[in-house]
Amino acid sequence: MAAKTGRQRPERWRPPRGRHRIPAEVIARSQRERLLDAAVDVIAEKGYATTTIADLTKEAGISRTTFYEMFEDKEACFLAAYDAAADVLARRVASAFESEQEWPARARAGLEALLESLAAEPAVARLALVDFGAAGPAAQRRYRAALQRMTPLFDEGRDFAPEGRSLPANTSRMAIGAVVGLIVDEIEAGRTERLPELLPEVLFATLSPYLGPALAAREIGKR
Amino acid sequence: MATDIESRRDALLKAMVRVVGRKGYEATSVADVIEEAGTSRTTFYKHFDDKHDCFLAAYERMVDEVFATIVAECDGERPWVSRVRKGLATLIEIFSLEPELARTAVVEVAAAGADARKLHWDAMNRFKGYLEAGREAEPEKELPEQISVMAVGAVSGLIFDELVAGRAEQLPELMPDLLFAMLVPYLGPAVASEEMRRAAQAA
Image (cartoon, rainbow over all chains, first blue to last red):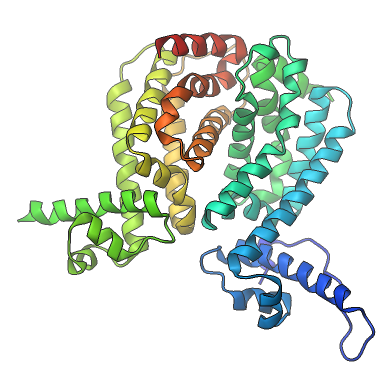
């Protein structure tokens, strides 16, 4: 099922078959994790609209009853998968960002982590930036919220840039839109695995609204 | 008689754009579309296989019309910055006057499957091509190849946010920011800010 989406995440732990003494909550957590992974993979493969609950339970290896114990419907399951994926991405980006001192280097580290994470898990990339659009208004709001979490990576440019404070309040949203536009183009063109090569362009899109094209190009040349 | 058949097809295409913008793609039914268009179910199926087929035709026609309107407004406009300003203002006016069309064009298209997303992508590429077309060469600056992707991505990100928040009618207020977003990858913040201030004064 997930072969085409190039899943590279390790297989989740599964409880052994037959009689065992593993606590029920451990089993439940493992089932939930498998189901959320399955949602990411199946939806990336089939698209949200045509994915059925049967597809999800089959891929996750759980029963229909177990599914409905955890989620009311497909949308609720999708939103939980979205939140989990967005959370992992946001934490990876934030910790890379925090590992550097000055803004251009911080932005570079954060974006590098973002591109590498998306490239390593193409199904997550599709879910986060493409497939959300099929899952209705709640998913659209999740998407906006997920992008908003990236704001500091961009907005520190205000303090760093000479005229940063006089830039429009929406500058970070614009830069995020530019970065997303670049990434989605690659995903749609089937080049998700090569996203890390896009770092110079993504960095240009991030730095140039604050620094201008010339300074941005100079920062990108540094390493 | 042929024109009558054509006009019914046309009415269905326009109805599809409006209904999807209002109800969302998923929730839209063929019954909604024929009711909005004032045609019969038979007429619908004479022209289209199903909802998806009609949506794709409707989307393509809408993009053609919006694009043609922008080209008609902007062609011959010089210099490049004025052309960008005028093109963007035309798009924003269309979106603010027809919020349902705007939602279909930018938000709901993502719900209509891979074929629809491809049409959206093609449309974005047309806009990118048009944005690049009249640009005066600036050989001293080495801009990345995907500069138009950044400009269009920034603008469409802002518009998407406004539409999801139900603020299509207020889009013209955002014109100065949108102009800044479109120009800044090319010209840098100083020039883009100046253009933004001028757009704000003109408003």
